[in-house]
Amino acid sequence: MCGLFGLVSGSPVAPGRLEAAQAIQLHRGPDAQSVQHLQVGRWHVGLAHQRLAIIDLSPAGKQPMLSPSGRSLIAYNGEVYNYLELRQELEGRGVVFRTRTDTEVIAAACETYGIADALQRLNGMWAFVWIDLASSRIFIARDRFGVKPMYLCEHQGSLAFGSEIKTLLRALGLRCAVNTRAVATFLRALQQDTSDETFFSGIVRLAPGHYAELGGTADRPSSRISRYWSLDIGADAPPTELAAIEETRALLDDAVRLRLRSDVPVGVLLSGGLDSSAIAALASERLGPDGDLTFISAVSDDPATDESSFIRAVAQHLRRPVREVRLEFPRAHILPLIARVTEQCDEPIGGFSCVAQNLLMQQARAAGVTVLLSGQGADEVFCGYRKYAGFQLQSLARGGSWLEASRLLLGFVRQRTVLGEFNIADARRYLPRWLAPSVPDVGGPALADAPLLCPPLGTRADVRERQRADIETLSIPALTHWEDRNSMAWSREVRNPFLDYRLVRFGVNLPMALKVCGGWTKYVLRRALVAHLPPAIAWRRDKRGFTTPEARLLREELRSGVGELLAPSAEMVRRGLVDAAAARARFATFLNPAGVLGQPFASRDVFQLLSLELWLRAYRENLSG
Image (cartoon, rainbow, N blue to C red; front, side, top):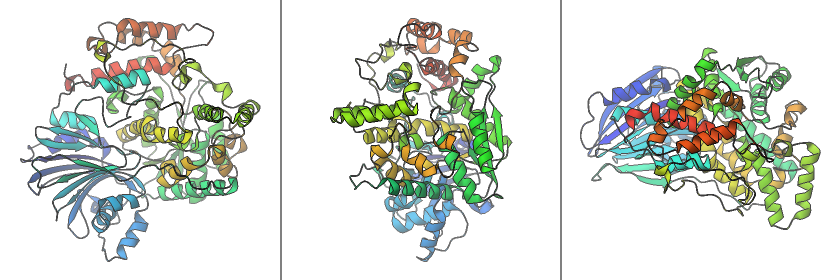
């Protein structure tokens, strides 16, 4: 896990620019830093790399790195977990390696198979630049699900790329306009990272599952984007329930096995829910009772959000200690903390869980645990969110399967799942227009004509299409964005077994009756793990996610601070992004809810305004207007 910055230009890279980028991204790679200038065709190329050493901790892992043949060069951020298998295959073709790194394996694979074929063979997370020195071609690639970041921008006839937006802004001295489309999508649809656009006009993301190619003989350094992978919704014959259970267990177990490869200590972010507990159990079994594995968990004194009883039940079942991080939020420190995390994440954040995650990473660093396994992605792959139960009920009703829909609904009643957790404020994005509560817009005049970056799915979309949308645009990109910045802010690496592409493809393509079944969400995953976990965890009824006392904090400790940030003098009001009166009315309604349907606003509806204002202030010097 590392940091990258690069510049491709028709003239030599300005002195000190790479070093400036290096300093900005130092948190991503405290173990080694290096800059390199080279000529690629007619282009001058400057690269800066910051290394967080995970595999082969020796100086041999320094980057940028030449391939074994010396015909290409790579600078890389991420981990390719199946590198040992690829290395053995390449050695069979005569490749002689100098290091034990996965970096050298990627470079050799790109030379041997070509960029598109090589990317298909990799299992992991990555963002890298690979330069074919023989043909003077430059390739920039990103992993299938965008776990590792890569941003691009054209600046004064040059093409710059980097792991973090702040690095591009500050190393290049940019002043960008606020992207009103991104702000409108954030405020009105509660979404971000849904397209290649960012909150900064002119800075774009390289899309997941894509690579960019630059030819060294072109007139200007512009890129041609190609897609190398997509999540296909197949029409294969559905497996039997037993076969699906066995394959789910086998794929997840192998995903965990690969992600335990490390030369530094490994831990698990254990929340007490099914997903992280499954990873904890499989990792513990793989390493054995004497294996070095640390559980790190967030606990609190708030009974509405604390999950310590579930966490301790898992730890006791697996006979391993757990390092508990008590989340405390002193009144005087909360706003500065949110401001710091917002700045670290480059763009506005969606909720207080992102802040809590940052604190958890800080404690992982204090514990000396460099690599952390996370349950991210399980809900999207196996339909764990409550909304999927609603989508399936709608799908069955539209298809005329009323009896099956009735049975499913009755199952939720009998099992006391899903229905008891229904919340009108959280659910309104998924309800039909005639049923969703009316929510006044807080957008200002600058957003009057701004289109959303994520057009809504049709109401008749297949549930698996909704899963794919969550994985590719609506959920996973934002979650992995925050997870990357939060972990790398403290020089930690997070790995996601549930985002192993083999498991994702299998899980999404399973029949819905194996995912939402008998009153349970994630049915097949529960069945696959029931022998590995306490029954209270495998068949846990409530769905909390990474919960925090966000609503209470906004109503109590943060009440006066939020009120001040929503004043007419606010930066978001001055720029015309938010209507001050509408924003204050929303906050007042949130503080004093009324009506038979309950609270029309979720805490996120208020938090997003707070985060937007703090983001504008953090990047004021880099925003025009």
